[in-house]
Image (spheres, helix red, strand yellow):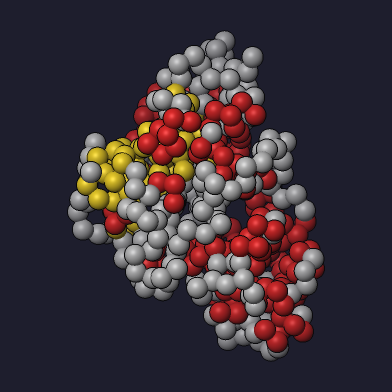
Length: 222
Length: 204
C-alpha cells in the first residue's frame, strides 16, 4: 500500500543537509540499530515484514519520528504482534520471566559470523517472462495485489509508467508475499529503466533516467 | 489496516533514548537480547565495516582491468573471497560514471544501502528530503551537494527497491596515473560511491 513511507517525488520537500554525515548521531541510534539486528535473529519475522511494520506506523508517527524512532516503533509493534513481548511488560518496563525463544538469542561470539553470513534473497523460480530490452509497463495502482493494505516495493511514482528492462537479476523472494507470512513465492526480478520525463513530465531534464528493481508481477508487456 | 492510535510502541516512554533503554531492559530480562552482542554489533559497524571497503574496490577497479570487468559482470564471488560480503550486501551491482552518465543511488521506500561496502548510511541518505527529492529533481540535489556535471552528461537515478544494492564507481580523477591503489582509494569518498559526490580531485 502506498502510504507516507512511499516518499519518492512526494513528501520531504525541504532542503537536504549534506553535512548531516553521522551514521549514528546519538548513542541511542546505534543501540536501536543493534536491537533491531539482534531481535531479527529470533526468527519471528523477515526483512519484508519488518519493513511493513515500519510502514504501518501511523502517518503522524512516521512523519514525526526520527529515523531510528521509526525502527524502534516498528520493532516494538512486531514484538507485541508476535507475542514475544506483552503490553504489560512495555508498561512495566521490565520483562516477566524468561522467554521460550531465549535459546535463539544472538550471543556476542556469534555476531561476526551472523553479519558476515548475510541472507541471500535469490531463489529458483520459473523462467523469466521478460528479457533485457523488452518494453514493460509498471502495474497501476502500486499496491499489493493479494493483501488489502499490504506491503509492496512498487513505488507509487512508477505505477503505470512504461520503461525498458535493462538487467535481469534472476528470481528473488517476493516481498508482497513474504512480508505477510504467505511464503517466499520467488519471482524473476528486473531492473527497469524509465525516462525521467515518463515519470515527471517536462519538469525533468530530457534524457535523464530512473532505474527501479521490479518483480515480474509488477510488470506487464507494453 | 494500519490506523493512527493504539500502537504498542506508544506504551514505551516518549523520549527515544529512554524508549530504546526500556526495550533493551525488557528484552534482556527475558533472555532475548545479550547486551554484549549489541556492543559487538555496534563495534562492527563503527570500527570494522565502513566506506574504506568500497573505496578499496573502486581503486582496484580503476587500476586492474580484469578486476573491473569481474566487478561489472559478476561481482559476488570475488567480493565473498575478499570478505566483503554480508548483511545488506548480498547482491551488489556496480554502476560506472562516465562522461555520458552520472549515477545517483537512493532508496525512496526506506534506506537500503550496501552495508558491507559502505557501512551504515549517513543521516542525509535516510532523510525524508533526500528520499523524496532525489528521484524528482536529481540535478538540484546534486547541485546542493556541490556536484558539477560534465556538459551533456545525463543523470541516471537508481531507486533500490529490492535486495539488490547499487554502488557508484566514480570517474577516476585526472592526473592520478602514478598513484598506487592505496593512494587512489584515499580519493574515493563515501558520497562519490552513492553518486552524491565525485572522487576527490575532480571537484572544481
